[in-house]
Length: 179
Image 1 (cartoon, rainbow, N blue to C red):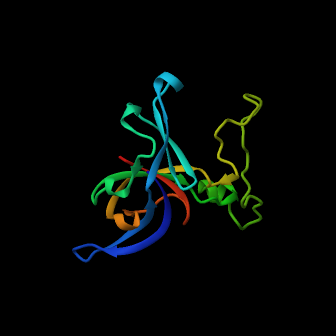
Image 2 (tube, rainbow, N blue to C red; image 1 turned 180 degrees about the vertical axis):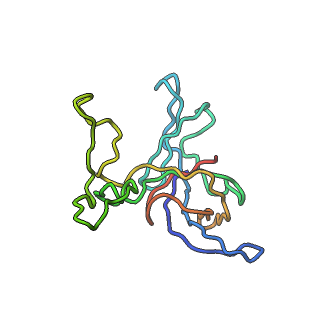
Image 3 (tube, helix red, strand yellow; image 1 turned 90 degrees about the vertical axis):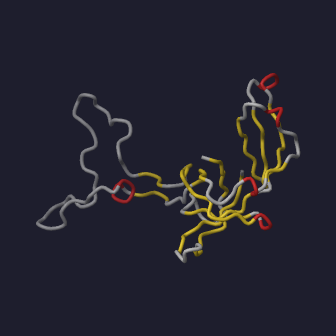
């Protein structure tokens, strides 16, 4: 299902324990296109939620019809799900913030405070190895939180309350699937 992250809040369970939950407005999602193995070479359906579209691979596209709706009542309290979304962008960050590296000594005439130092070997290989932890853009990438538990479903408002956090900020578009 596709949805929008509404935000986080706190609720109390039957025992009186306080739970941190993320509220997600999910659906109704409508099947807008069906792709078959004969025509496109693979089986998939395209679902829409507002202006958001997502293609999902399926084994039997004949089981679905255009206009078919998916609602939050497909989920119930206690289900384990995965939520994918875009993380919060943090802009250009140095290696200390981005990779949690340590700084150099700040006293006794040291000139090695926040600089990266040497980044490669000598003549051989004569280049910087791929994957070197350096400064660069941080965040704003696709992430999936697995093992989230459905705490409560409110079908009349199309809301799902999930135990834990969901990638991104409020208003972020997310994709929900059963684990």
